Image 1: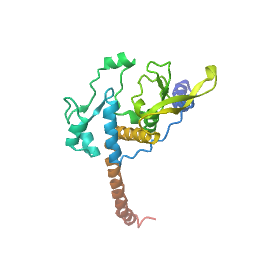
Image 2 (image 1 turned 120 degrees about the horizontal axis):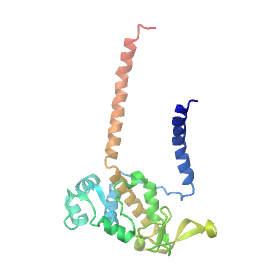
Image 3 (image 1 turned 180 degrees about the vertical axis):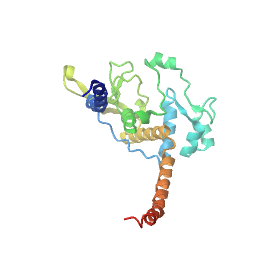
Image 4 (image 1 turned 120 degrees about the vertical axis):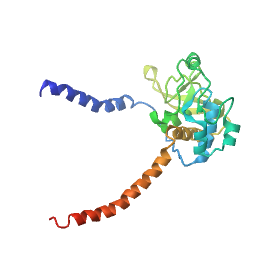
Length: 247
């Protein structure tokens, strides 16, 4: 093989092996729980919007989504939007941003606070759902908690009073010790089933925010496929007519 060909070939093989290396490196991570979301469930989306605004939006923004667009898509009237979700000087046409300054986030939590508009796109709904449910006590951390799917997380658990307190399930000893799960040791104001529903509603809402046109795109896709299916019939007979004298 010529030297000019060897380098591109090695590069191509490296690209092919990269996903395998990534999977192997992450093979010891926790198994994610299935979110089982339903973007057709408007009641879930509305609850998720309420929970996100009340518990998450003090720090996290949805800077690529407008209040008015969100409310229209998930069936919230403008009256209810202004009454229950908009606070301060925010207007329906504004983007869903937070008042927290980036420098304050870095000061309080040690890192910039991420915008969550696309979090289910670059993480996945299952990851977000599992993250919301996987906080556990860890005295070594600044806020006394850690997270099974996001080790050394900088954010405190905003749902402690709702979910309750979870302790880690640890396996191994010494350097081999690692957290493999969590267990509820003190229930909050919600039952485990109620908190599961809440976490699923928030995940459902964030999945919608990450791709608000998804349901419409799927609807249009079905129409296009039906049109192509119908168009195939005359196209097939035209083809037979054009080629009938050719053997």
